[in-house]
Length: 83
Image 1 (cartoon, rainbow, N blue to C red):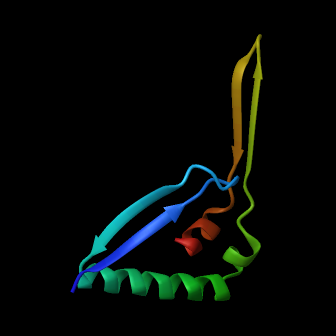
Image 2: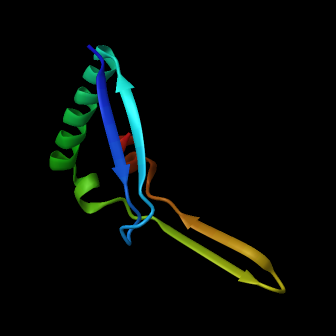
């Protein structure tokens, strides 16, 4: 039996309400439940989730040089572990 879900979002000021109605088949619902279970386990057990993955993004613009974007990413092993 399909599952009907209504998702309501608000902006940070509590304005601009948006509601989306979704319908999931039994198979899709099972996949969502599995995902939720695995995400909760990852949140409780993973230092990557608890501590975060350090990243840095710097964006600078000057009239003479234009836009300069510099990004520092974490080591690949941390990204792979999260994925």
